[in-house]
Length: 268
Image (cartoon, rainbow, N blue to C red; front, side, top):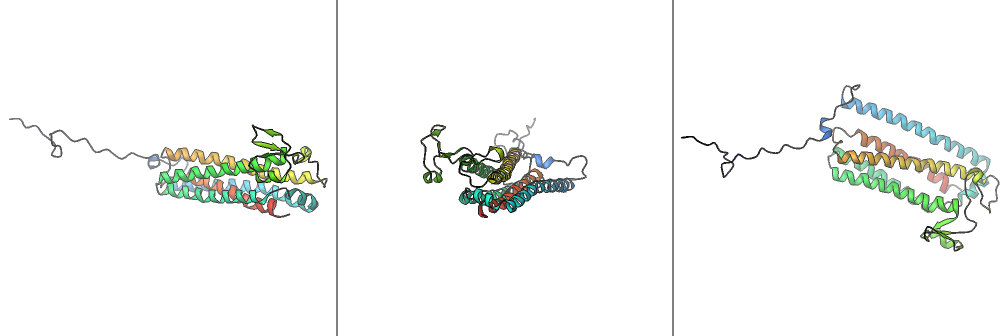
């Protein structure tokens, strides 16, 4: 008699399916680049390179701080006149937004190290959201009124000015006659200026905050790139170089604003 072999774990004698092997994450099979001996050496080299790059960024903004100092000493009244048009409340709100984003960025790195990818992705997305809020405040409530005289209809400052009745973008922006024209250099055309060097203040203001805003946009791009790679399982406890480098860049962006906020908004 021929005996049909059967699996003792199957009630019908059919062999049980093989247990499903756990999915291999990309970070588990990642190997260092050929010019590094191991992943630890690669991480140290990349981090050193990032710090050198950040040092050049500090040099870039140092030039702006030097220009601010020199022009402020030479034309103190022009800087006093210009800075009074900045609302410290918007600057303070943007400071809080960036400080929160620094915390969520650091949390995102930590959650990647702990393989808590859901929490990591949430923190990275929230960091990008904070960057977007910062840019909206900067361009909508600060740049636009000073440059063109158009106030966003929800801007609290609008009630302190005479609305000319002229609107734009379907009523989202209301024009205030005589408020715009606070532009840098030769573009300056503010009709109520009392100092001939006030355009230098606005040159420094737009240069410093504009370059900083461009760094916020670049930082958001880095974080989005990292977020997509986190979704693919590229990073994990033993490989999170990209996430940490993006975090270093974002922290520098926040740190620069910590210096710009008091210099531009608080010192009159």
